[in-house]
Every structure is written in structure tokens, then in C-alpha cells.
Image 1: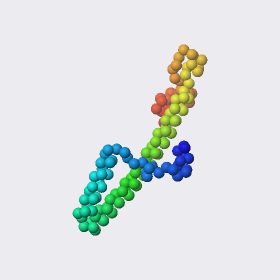
Image 2: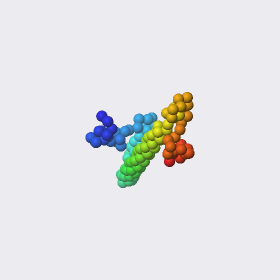
Image 3: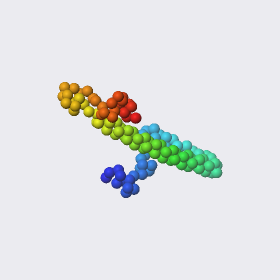
Image 4: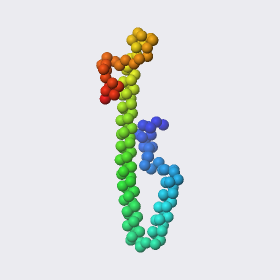
Length: 124
């Protein structure tokens, strides 16, 4: 199934489906679990509830930040793709001397509207 179809059909939930599978992640989860078990057994119930609430807020903030990072990264990737497509189109629009009836040369000649421009100027 293509990405657009999966997205349309509601099959993509990266925030819920993607779980890091690195030793660092697993160690952190284990350490956090152990600390929370220690807190639960040794702290007053009211203090433990406040710590648990604090961790819930931290998780909520993390979700918000991850969503913003995702949106920014996706937007950046799409802009990069757009720019590279434009550069490829401009590059492919250049004509060679071979195309200009000089089969002995491979020198690139820009189209007439780009004469005198550097590649950077043409891309902007």
C-alpha cells in the first residue's frame, strides 16, 4: 500500500507505532521504572502523586515538541525536494554544444534566458 493510501485509510500513527529500539532507550525506560517503583514504596502517597503528575506533564510537553519537530522536519524535507527538483529541471534545460551542431564538444551552454548568469544566480 502506498503512503497516501495508508494515510487516507488511517493506518499511519507514527507517534504510537514507532518505538525506539536502542540500548540507550531501553536502559532509560528501565531506570525510570526502577526509580518510580522506589518512589512509590518510599514516598508519601501525595508526594508520589505529584511526581507522577509532573511526569505526565513532561510527557505531554514531549508529545507537543515531537509534533512540532515532525512538522518542521517534514516541511524542510518537502522544501528540499522542491528545490532539488527545480535545480534538476534547470540543469536538464541546459543545452550542450553537441545539441547546437558541434558534436565534438560537451561544454554546457545555458538557455538564452540564462546567458551571463552563474548557476547560483539561475537557481535563485
